[in-house]
Image (tube, rainbow over all chains, first blue to last red; front, side):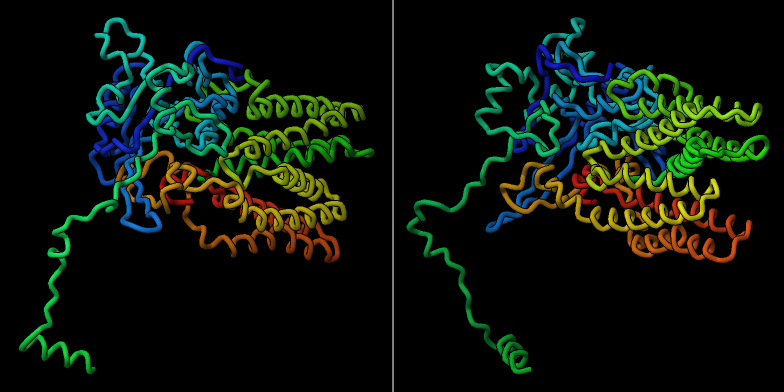
Length: 249
Length: 290
């Protein structure tokens, strides 16, 4: 049934630290690697070695330039995957019941054998988290590595989503965001974690930690600083002549 | 949004066909015998043809029947039900008229109501999407109804009613376009809210995730030919309303009426192309596009 559950027992999700992410795309690759050979249809590529390659990805990393009113611009790397929204618009539009949100952990999943590939859920998602696989004709999305996090055949440290496990910078965190005492919830509270597009009313579970403010030249200036002032000498000789002549023109 | 030919054909032709069936259903003095057969055949070819076209864009058309299951929550599922109900009820009404010359008014009215209901559920598939601010407005279902009623009236040979309705549709369409141009800005969604970085400063998409294209860009961020939108809007209004009106105000002739109908259909196709091609999905903001 594609109505949303009134309440989920837990709200598993990701916390992504935009201050720490270095934009290496390792999470993109490990996600594609794990999810193409495990749960569900593989993530196909079209024309992978040709002139116009494209393919299905459940996680993509954007990069944004942010220009404050004063000071230099800041570059922010921005990984984006399904946010496992509480009020997921992709679930309620589904005509077949293939899309659903699990009561036990809040993960939004697609039952691929029921999906007709109409694409309406991808239209309903404001974040671009769903992609129709062109080879399989069904909708693919982040499963929060549902086949890893409960998998007792894996060593305990591997029972997290592939993207979290692989992140070399520690910019991705996984946990229960409905529990105010969980590590992820405390991180969100400490760092002022935010929702993406809150005005869309989707109530995303995944949170983003904004970049910390950049430090600037505040406080004491070294006593030797005046001696480091740039030396601007007047040009002499031939250069001085060019300078004067150009000035006159 | 990507203006897929199958979706344009679906909304245009099913709207026209269901509009024609509506007028046949409410007609107090409907055609009977072979003449009724011809009218209903055109209505059914358009409506069923349009609905079949919509199945063409599915990734897994062989599972299409599953779309009937979620009528409690999904407008697409509700559309499947209303379309089938409308076609079955109108089918019985038509069979009685064609083969027995009997008119069951209740059946006609019920079928007509279901026809309008189908057009409404179709329009709600688009209207419900908050992610496409241009569509997410009560005026979208009104526009779809006016198109279906106007086109249906023309097809059923109701010249005066048809002209009034396509005039109204043209006015509604012009207003919908002008108001729609402001709606993305008015929705409050911007690259700043999309990234949550607006408190630092002005955000610019610096580098996309991949050098190539992807499903999201092809499907949701269609920006080709938007520069011709103004001209296409005028062409759509001219073909859809102005030319048919001129042709039908001339002394009546069957050929003129046929050209008027074809011109109207061409105009509706152009306006539907714009309906999709001009629709900005908010996911485009992540790519610095709209």
